[in-house]
Length: 259
Image: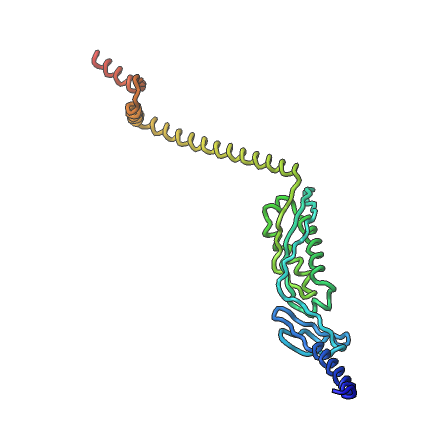
């Protein structure tokens, strides 16, 4: 190939390279879990995808948005509850983009914005409740956090599905106080249960005494039963208690015979 022929081919080669570059810039591929938000000369055209499509180079600009669920850890926040107890709380937030256009146009960085609103909401909501509510009603607080955060992120095209409080860290002094309180509560319950048992036992004994007072024969039957229980034991010495009623019966009989 002569130099003249090569010189004539150079423009065609340059044009072919430029065409290939333009084609590569025009062809866009968006995966199933993404959407491509198209801007034409700065004006929003719309979201496209998934699949393959063409854009106009140097005129159109595409921004990809991931639609998958994002798991975001909320950094540990220091919260002062309504009963003036300082705790450290962290959480986890699950969210995803449901409107790709709003996530690009209405907020600069939807992930960072969601993180910031989650932190402030966590402090505000938990600061309005007491410590006992934070420890015992966590599910209720999770739902409230989810509703408030989702309400703030909805204009950005972000849907918050779950908010979970992960860990509540208390000061050592507060832990000792709560342990002492729990121990005192267990002691109180034990005393109440014991007192209720004594009350029920006394009521049953009173009923038994009333029955024995009305029917003296029941006392004799109880006496015989007690003797049977004593006899089953291997004792070298047996003491037989004699009821006064039984002795009085023999005394009455002997007085009648003497007369």
